[in-house]
Amino acid sequence: MKKMLSILLAVMMCLSMSACSSQPKNGGNDKVQVKESVEILNKVWETYKEDEKFASTGGDFGETMNEGPGKLSIENTDVLQNTLYLPADYVEFVDDAASLIHMMNANTFTGSVFHVKDGKMEELSSAMKENIMNTQWICGFPDLLIMANVGDYLVTAFGNEEIITNFKTKLLEVYSSAEVLFEENLNQ
Image 1 (cartoon, rainbow, N blue to C red):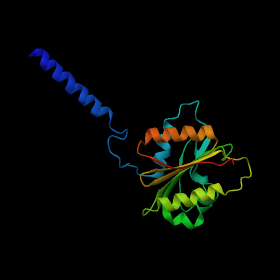
Image 2 (tube, rainbow, N blue to C red; image 1 turned 180 degrees about the vertical axis):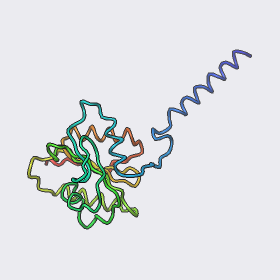
Image 3 (tube, rainbow, N blue to C red; image 1 turned 180 degrees about the horizontal axis):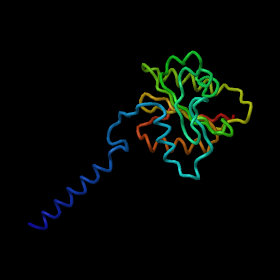
């Protein structure tokens, strides 16, 4: 009887452990709980080891954050359009933005997050992809472009292939329910 009870307890313990380990990393909730765009970049940036970090800036030029992401005013259409490549006709699709940019060369790493309004994710991501892919780069060429959907947020990053791949890996670790929409080579 004791042997049977021990076996039963062992089986129950194994089943409960496997059930716990199969939960998604975001606590079992596939609905991403994010309050603002900069939160996504901050959470990913916090996972970087010191030797992985690069000289960076983020946010509005008057209120930039040095060494990390920053919140970006959606009224700052020059930065949205000319630095983050959000097409002018699509600015009305977003109501919150953040950026993380390599301080020495934006083509090494430019990352952005936009909160997308009213289910316009597919339309906005396609327009941004086309805009970035058709850019005539002046100062060096970025290697890789990725775009991901994290809840109602569009995450974009382009630049050096190794840095972008590392960013994508960390993004997917932090937000296990994130969906990569595009991953395109820009150096063709």
